[in-house]
Length: 274
Image 1 (tube, helix red, strand yellow):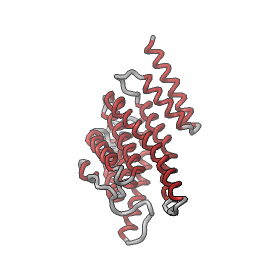
Image 2 (cartoon, rainbow, N blue to C red):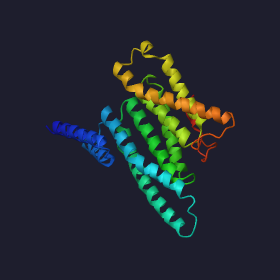
Image 3 (spheres, helix red, strand yellow):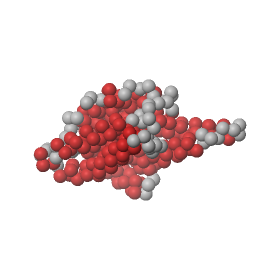
Image 4 (cartoon, helix red, strand yellow):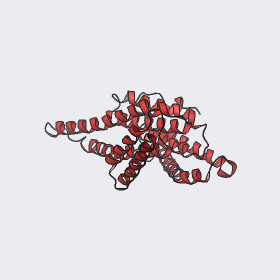
């Protein structure tokens, strides 16, 4: 009877989270998903739908603060006089603390509750990818020096996930989502479009080799589920290819593709198996 009540509560909370998502109230969405985690048996993993919605809830919740922090940081670099300088620094510190607090709490949830109960490779890859994403978001706002530890955690999480994701079918949505996350990390944090292109190109080439026709283990649902992810990867590959061609031609490229690496963290290409 208690189990039935718990399942009913989880279903209700899931519906509420979906409604909150539709209303773009991501704070409510995240709260409902955290309540689902609390309502789940401590020894049990979330369902695939629940864990995906939890990841979406956190990323959407964090999207606006991340964007506003980066925008504010870029706009206040010129505020150097005695009056506006301290104001900008104080506001940026408040913004940074808000983001870091949310990220640290979520990484702790992954480490202490979600990963220990994950059984399948898909579930482990999902949580490790999410841990990598959240960790570099933290490193991003902390800066090159203070964020080195979080950047190393992100790199380690992606490397561990890489060892598992290669055992999944190349048409598996978790493979594609992982590749997109790693490419995003390499492009926007490590500032290495060449490495990002290499990751995306490799995954898409694997898809061409292991098409649904030659991979009977792939269900129709999985194929349909990965269509958007594949489209995203194709668009990203084309964007990276164009950026690299512009760079090779010696023409100034987009401002979000700077050369070099601001951190002395071990290269992802060295830590992720080829």
